[in-house]
Length: 156
Ligand SMILES: [Zn+2]
Ligand SMILES: [Zn+2]
Image 1 (cartoon, helix red, strand yellow):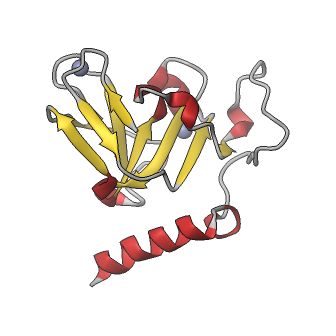
Image 2 (cartoon, helix red, strand yellow):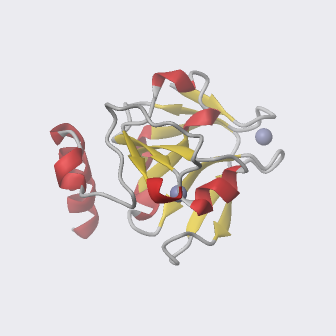
């Protein structure tokens, strides 16, 4: 799946399906997007390949207090993905709206629904959590295995 920033300087390709797609309704994501939620596809950084340009890293405060690195186009400053403190730079949180076909990645899980805008109506069959959730209970086994593999490699 291909994605790009608004001016087209940054182009990238996701070479594997994401681990999971989060729709986050926290107030931080609302502020960062200027909208009502963020749609993030989590994927191993090795499966996000730049096909044009190089994004700038912008250190940005985050909900956890540990900060995030937001990767932005050096020209139009649109954010294409973030790295959060938890998984570090091994995992990209790709902004689904920057993909050419964002409709291919609907949310697997809704999080921080306690601060969801009241007019956002969640689909009945998608898991939703007031705050966060336990990955081991919600992720497909294949995604859990990919995550284990990623961090096994890191600790060696
Ligand atoms: Zn750009
Ligand atoms: Zn959020």
